[in-house]
Image (cartoon, rainbow over all chains, first blue to last red; front, side, top):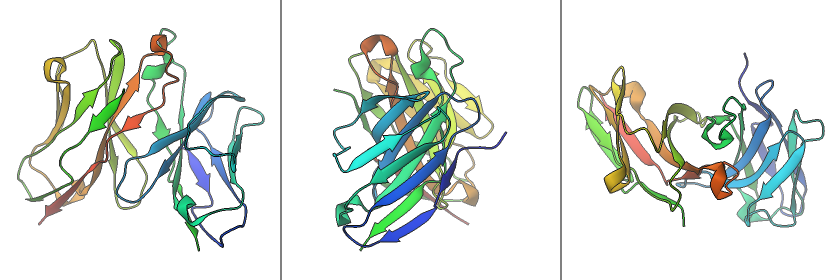
Length: 119
Length: 118
């Protein structure tokens, strides 16, 4: 069973450019989360999918950010018109649905992240 | 409001010393879940443990042990006989129960950087 994978691992872009990241969750995990981590901080929640439905977005997710999970498998996170403040590590996590009584107790398994640097 | 506080920013120990990483949380939910993750220099978050709010039993796994105390809202992590490979940033995280409307996103502390010197 392979873990969560993310591509690319590193991305350097110029301010104003668009970037897209991909996350492939663990097979059959129906929940998928995106987080952002800046230097010296813990990860902060961005958005969450249950299968293909995007169920929640954080206030951190400005209108320049969009995420999709078209077939309930892989997900993409796009940032349009990047700004220097977008420089961070973008982490993806997935979790199964083993606990019918409360899926929030599921362990989230993280990918290696995509490190974005906006010049 | 939900919050996780890891007051220790950095800890440095010598190999074979025991070390305890503190975690204090705030939540209004009666059902919640606590986690510890390890982030080595490679960057990938590695799951260590999950604890449910209604299970206050302490847990030991090899050199790792966890002390959960609801009375003080703490979920501390102890590494016994530390090794150089334990050097990493350790994060404590909180997830609230679905009945409270949470979608299960994790709320992380700022992490504690542990350096174990040979």
